[in-house]
Length: 192
Image (cartoon, rainbow, N blue to C red):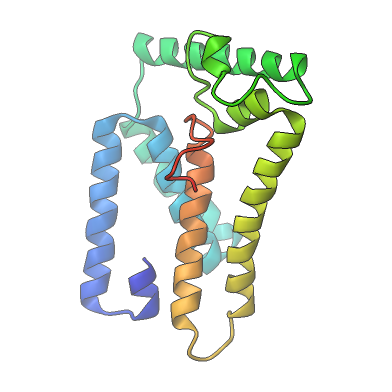
C-alpha cells in the first residue's frame, strides 16, 4: 500500500490487489479470528484516511463477509474463547492482588495454566501499574510519532515518501495493537 501511495502505477495496483487476496485467503484458511480483525483494522485505517468515517462503514461492510467465511466456530472455538477469558480473568486478579509491582516479569504462567493471550493483561499482571504505565507510554509515543508525521507532512510538496510510509507504519501498528489483544506479545520482537 505504501508503494502504491508513493506512485500509483498499474503494476503497483496489481501488487496491492494480489497482496490483499493472499492475505484474505490466508486469513480464511488459518481460521484465525484475530488475523481477520487485524486485516480489517489495517484496511480500515486506509479507508478512514481516504474517505473519513463513511470509509469505516464501507470497510466494515466489506469485512463482514470475511468474518463470516473465516474464523473458527463450533465447540473448539467456544472452548478456546472460554480458556482465554479464564486466563484473562486470572491475569486481572493477579493485577488486583499485586497492583504496584505485579507478579514479576515472566511469572504469569506460574499463577495460571495458560499464557494470557492478551498483551495488555499480561503487561499489567506482570509489571503492575507503574510498569504497565511505562509500557503504554512507549506504545503511545510510537503512535504519536507516526500521527505527527502524517499530519506534519500532509501538504508538503515532495513528501510523498514520508506520507506513504508513516501511514503504512501507523496502519500496521494499529493492526498490531488489535492483534496483541489476542496474543501474549507484550515483549515480542514483532511488536517492538
